[in-house]
Amino acid sequence: MATKNQSSKSQSKQNPKSTTYKSGDNQKSAFNFGDNSTNVLIGAAAAGAALGFAANMGRKLIVQATSAASGDWADALVTEHRMTLAIFDKILATTNKQTTMRSTLLAKLKYALSKHAIQEEMVIYPALRQEGRTGEADDLNSEHGIVKTYLYELETMPKDSAKWLARVRDFRSMIEEHMREEENEVFPALRNSLSDEENSKVTALMNKEGFKFA
Image 1 (cartoon, helix red, strand yellow):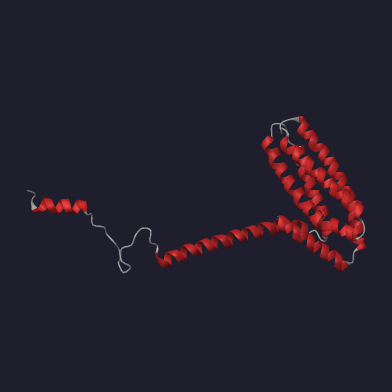
Image 2 (cartoon, one colour; image 1 turned 60 degrees about the vertical axis):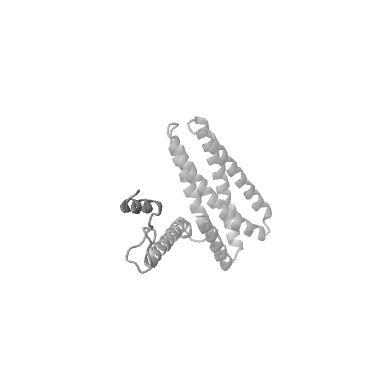
């Protein structure tokens, strides 16, 4: 026959006593943060999101500031042309062993050309069409398709070969001719055909498109 103490121990094992905490208890579960802690976490998350947004906006402003500071839309696009050609020159100065450098510079070139193309395709070429110069706009826009083809080829070709660098050189020659036509003929003619107010509007619209892409 089991003793009283043995019976009590057996009952305790069969029916373990769970510990609960009421809202008024001083002790709390490790998972119960309480209202104040929750508010702190929410506030920290909101602050982090705000900082991230501000940092992104700051980055966009910096990226677009170089172009915007150049003056009107034509001057800004010419500035971007020069910056793009500088990236080409850095690529052409690399050796076949510098594949990582080539990949990094190609990414920068791709970004610069994509941002530039968006500004022209969304604002400048439509303005050309509106001025009755549809043929010019279409020709320039089609050349942007060739630019994309070059970028695709350079992305997929082995970057440790002389053929890759030769393709870069061909690409630079092609795009420099495209830029020369815009700078010497297209941009001056379009700017002169627009009023000061219209040019200001084109500048604002172009910077808006560039800011979105930045």
